[in-house]
Amino acid sequence: MIIRSKAPLRLGLAGGGTDVAPYSDLYGGAVLNATINLYAYATLIPRNDGRINIELINKSLAFHYDASSTIDTAKEDSIPAGVYNRIVKDFTGTPLSFDLILFVDAPPGTGLGTSSTLLVTVLGAFVEWLKLPLGEYDIAKLAWEIERKDLSMEGGKQDQYAATFGGFNYMEFNNGNVIVNPLRIKHMLMDELSHNFLLYYTGTSRLSSRIISEQSENVRNSSRKPIEAMHRLKEQAGLMKEIILKGEFDEIGPSLDFGWKYKKDMAGGISNKGIDLIYDAAIKNGAAGGKITGAGGGGYLVFYCPGVTRYKMNNALSAYKGHIEPFEFTEKGLETWTVKNS
Image 1 (cartoon, rainbow, N blue to C red):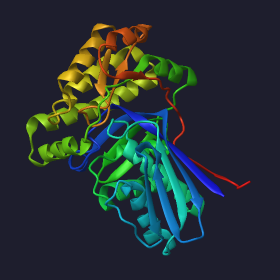
Image 2: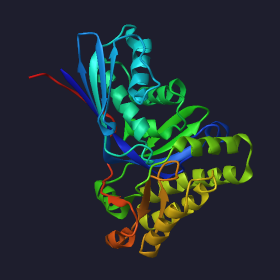
Image 3: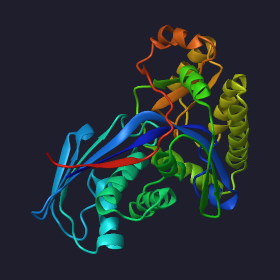
């Protein structure tokens, strides 16, 4: 048999960074995000010869192991290795043998939650294979524990839940708990949002861990300006939820612009001269607002382009090294299925 899984990448639209400890633990966080039709994919094929083969197609890398209770998480396949180790520890108690082939529609370090989404996808494949009794909250929480605790990877909590649940979600983070509030949006309005949002890849990636580490340190040091910025971003998430639910789309651009100005106060390196030039060019040509996706420093920018202003963006941004990434919003989160061998 062949086990497959896929999970969508996400756009953070408001409140990003308030899901990161210690801010979320001390003050409570809130995020508004939405998943898009760019995915992480996993194909798992069981073996019976005591071997483990892991292939990361994006990186043109392959790793081979003898099946054991733990495999090395210090290599570039740390995410699937970390999932495997936890599955054996918590569920099977005995080694497993399989081929695992992985692919992601976007480069790593670009602010779409690629690492967390890949981890959710790998975990989903094991859940499907072993028929583990895990619901959406269970999968998202376990994915967060593997990534943040077992693998010590810096970051917040929104990405694992976005990939698992899918759709537009207002998420609340308080005292270690996560509440996912799905937004009920008519298909017509979702189509309008897909038309008006524009995703631009800057052509650069970044190491988000440095920015996230500085952001967390600013909170631990009680730095007034970064903490005040996070308070404003948390408020923005609630406002963005109301804007979208009420269909007041003319307010989306100004809300994004408001959040972008405060996001840059959370830590150094979130923006730079190149990002500012691209942002200014988009605004001058009709975008009503925008922001960097993820922690910042590179990756993707998202803009809200009302009316037909999106059609001006090809010329407006052609002077820069990146490109516009076609996408649509999607309602589904993690999906898994089994195919019988022919």
